[in-house]
Length: 264
Figure 1 (cartoon, rainbow, N blue to C red):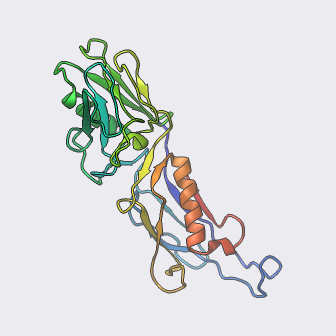
Figure 2: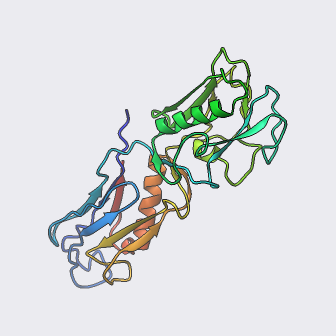
Figure 3: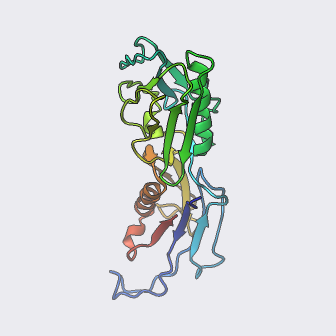
């Protein structure tokens, strides 16, 4: 199992930098992280004094994290009658909508692992399949961050998934990494077209708060709210996005190169 521990380290030990390196003549006091919190880890403060570099680390192992929100990313367009006839609204002959919440049993807004999402996909497909005896094998591979969906060889129906053709605002395709329709699930597994490990939904799990030396970006007491762009990420791309946002939001870009590191 790969250990993608989402860690934030703020390396702010400027240690008496002089005017040779900065456009000011006096030395700067060392900064430290007072505290930080986000939707992945709990609050954790670090650094016991002005000369201690601060950091915060996820308090639990984070392998991946998927969030499904009703009306945002919870629907899979599924053709259950052996004759794929997908359209933009998933209303073609034999088309049904598999709802990850209603049919798959997920809870709106809760964070799930890839394995838990795979279990929900399986439950949803089997609930909506036209043959009660049909079975699906669904897995999430943490080595490549991709899902695999396969109709078992004994299934009566050779079903299909309309990832691309269905364009509803609630489509789950981007969250699950699919970009093209997959036909004949009994004949071949449908594997995600791109790697996915975390999804960020606007207004659901897109904000974390940060303070440095007890202050927010305007140098007054409190936290700065930092909003991550909604979308689907791997651990590496999410860390990069968060690092850029932290540097800009707190004006840390004014300090020496790489004042902030977000590591896996």
